[in-house]
Length: 295
Length: 160
Image 1 (cartoon, rainbow over the protein chains, first blue to last red):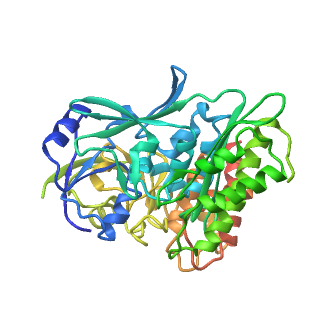
Image 2 (cartoon, rainbow over the protein chains, first blue to last red):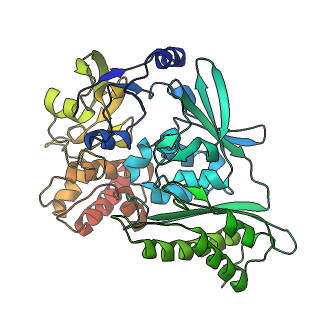
């Protein structure tokens, strides 16, 4: 292991003070599921790591002012253990089933998953379709940024060097809306997705038409999770049936700009994306209506 | 490079030692405390071989820096049974010959312990899920799963 210093702040005030005056070669670390790997592979060469694990005031899941709020240091297993994650928020349990093995979900934090900002972060597509915000804090105060703006590119976020991410939150779901998540990798857990997909949908009570639909993938036009807005537009106002899904899949094929990598080819990634997009959408609709839609 | 005073509990025993920033929990357990039951595998969080229990939760000791374990309770394979008084999981693994090269077995047993501590009646799916973070390249897993089922049954009888 490469040598570096570790700064262990006693409280958040000390931490923000430190970050305000120390900026070169400083990396924030929670439980290290992503960062330690990158240090071992020499992709990251820290001079100092700042240990966040003592700041347990940022470990919470709560409902407040019409929003679900998740503290940045909440681990995936703590999140899904929260009673607030029962339906309609069980999408997070769907994510956790495919996120990693027990030790990884015991360690990986929500804030870490957001700030790592790679195309394989399973929580990002879900937070995108929930139109989540992130709250960041520095010695000068707090600001709130939509997650879509915060995640700027592969391994790039809007987090400034004197800031920490403290919370993500999203509006409570209405009775007519639901989310679902699907992921395909080489095996079921402990694997990095080559495609993942999250959907949010809101159905008109009587007609079951799609009042609103949001779709996000781990990759759309670049190597970061994004919304597939053209495909969303094709589906809005439609009912879920063979015709509307076929049209949507055609739009999706044009909208996705995928690439090949060491995991899979571009063509395979495209076919899988179109297949799991339908599956995720139909499962969401089924969860909401209790009726299985066969297409 | 700065040193930190690490105070924590390992297998019920309190320790206080000076650690360097880059020392991992795995290094301290093996090299400073001599607990060689915890093994090093991939060192990047992929194989799960170095798993230990931290405050009752399974974690990969290769990803945690030692100072991050301050004030925590760690349990390693050495802490769950002795040769004279084996844990039901250890007995069941022996009965089923669930260990071939043995390298992943400490982690497998701790992962199973985390499961059985929370869920005394696991389904086959629960068992697969609970051990899914640990890679065994010898056994094909079947004997491991059978051993966990045997241990679960034995522990249930005991707790009645």
